[in-house]
Length: 268
DNA sequence: TCTTTATGGCGAT
DNA sequence: TCGCCCTAAAGAT
Picture 1 (spheres, rainbow, N blue to C red):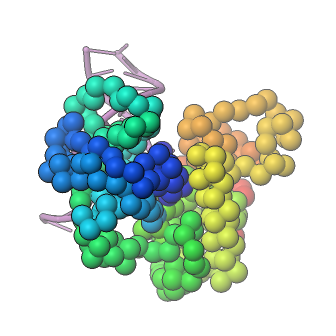
Picture 2: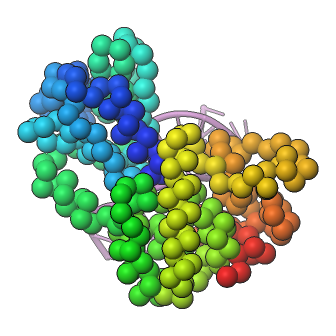
Picture 3: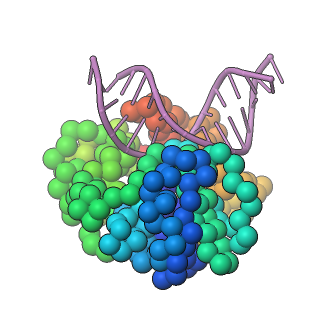
């Protein structure tokens, strides 16, 4: 479930389990064998996230840069670790825990300088200290739709397809509006909402966006469980009635990704 | 036992 | 804009 909240959560989870202690590092699959051999037995010295990028610090040896992409997964378990299949790209193992990485887009050993370059090309992250001003600078000058801009990691880091759809719904914003058509107040509301939603996402390790007054219980409807594990308004609900106004939720392809929105509620 | 789909992103065209 | 990379679970047959 790799949107930014997942990665920040993983950074904290790694630190909690392995931080400051030596870890055994292996690549059962072999694709990260060289890096793993270099790091094996060294202590994990830092663990950071920026957007969807995870950085595991090994002091002077550099950083393991991990990007889960669409399919990647990181899972933890109690020691001793079971035999690894041939899809485990990276395994970290301590005395009490192990972590397995499968299917990532990126798993590579990088230098401080290379890490800095990644930070430099990413936009502000609602889960890191700072403001959304840098994002506004780009959005307010762009003719691209706000839906596409929210998915552009150079503009804002960490927002994925679920948060994109949900924050635009919550703010009542038509996803096809041009970035430069937004007002500063609208952008500030989007940013503040993302900060709040994504912090909740880190805390509970899932995406919940439905306000208390719109839960099935509050609306007098039968309980509902979205198949991705959280409670949302429009993401993957195309064809179903909007939880607020009853209009049929729509979907469309936007830049090879599925966009979801409610034409009844998102009129701003 | 297939085919499809998925909360991403890169590089070539 | 397109193809491509990576994996696993759900859905179709």
